[in-house]
Each structure stands twice: as C-alpha cells, then as structure tokens.
Image 1 (cartoon, rainbow over the protein chains, first blue to last red):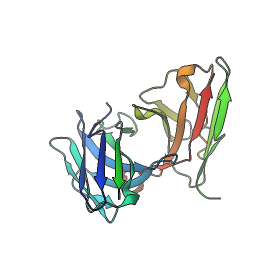
Image 2: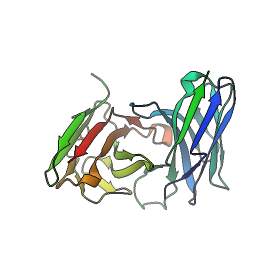
Image 3: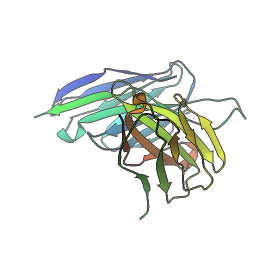
Image 4: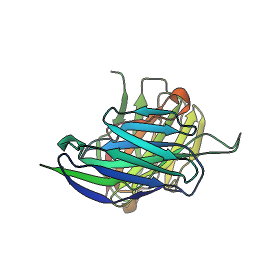
Length: 115
Length: 114
C-alpha cells in the first residue's frame, strides 16, 4: 500500500524548479507532504484533501488528482534550504466503520540544491 | 515542555534482549503512530493508536508490541530484538485537526541491535 514517489533523487541549482510525484493504487482521502533534513525528524509541509481543500506552505504548492490517485509537489525558484528528503503520505478511504485512519508514506525523494 | 518526546535517543542492545522505546506527547492528541526508517524503504508504519486502549497494526508489525493505557504515552516494545530491527524509530501524534491527520514527529530513537 506504500505510495510510489518519483523521481528518487534530483539535483537542482539555486533558482531552478522541480516537481515530485506521488501515486497510489488505492482511492485516497488525503495526500500529505513532509520534508526531512538530514539527521532530523520529518516536518509537515502540506496536505491536500479529497474535495479540494488545501493547507500548507507559502512557497511550495501541490496538486491532487483524485481520479488518478496522484499528487505532485511543485518547488519553484529553489533555495538551498529546500534540500532534504521529501515524503508523500497517503490516507486511504475506508468504508464506514472499517477502522481508524492511518498514514502510509512513500520511500522519499532526495532533493539537493547546489549554489 | 510542550511537544512530543522520545526516549532513549540512542540505544545499543544485543540480539534477543527486550527493548522499550518511549513516546510522550503533551497535546492530548488522540492519534499516535510508530514508524521505522531504513535506507531504501522510507518511513514504514509499525503500529498506530486512535485513542487510549485502541491500537492497530500497520505495515510491519511483526516483532513489535505496543500499549496505550494513557492518552499521552505510546511505548513500543521489541520483545526479542533482532539485527533486522536496527533502525531509526519515529513516534508521531495527531489531533486529526479539521478532519485530517497532520502528524508531528518526535526527534527519533536510533536503535542498534548487535
């Protein structure tokens, strides 16, 4: 049930743009994006809910295609501080009464921004 | 201090020993989670809990036991540690704000099994 992320790694120069993709084989309730710096815990960036509601980060945007069960994270005009590993997490839609929600993460995309 | 704390931060143990990793949060969040992180696998869910006394298995529960007698604590026990359980373990909590599980992670516990 792990979502699939692509690419696995990307190297950017400052100011360049990047797109990270996340796809699932299951119908999704929400897609989350987290960033993890080396040696630190993952930190929440953004969430996209079924139905279009969105929360999150000022300088990073994301889209959620419910029909395709896909999400993309867009990083524009990258900065050195964007470096880290980006994880998408997915919540699957469960039938009513089937149990509580759980968040499953992909394997991550390592982003390196160089001067 | 408010937040989510894990202990110990670092632990070295031997194969076959029992190990307990502690997780404590001060927000009274209903949901708590345990993930393990390994190179090439990302974050994998071990167990999660929707409330005190309610726990459920995640993707990789074998070899682990959890309990949640109080809302604020969610310990993870390795009853007989194996080398394959060498990993970084992250605890997380969520209040299911506005209908979604936004997770806040602890700093992690690095476990080495010799």
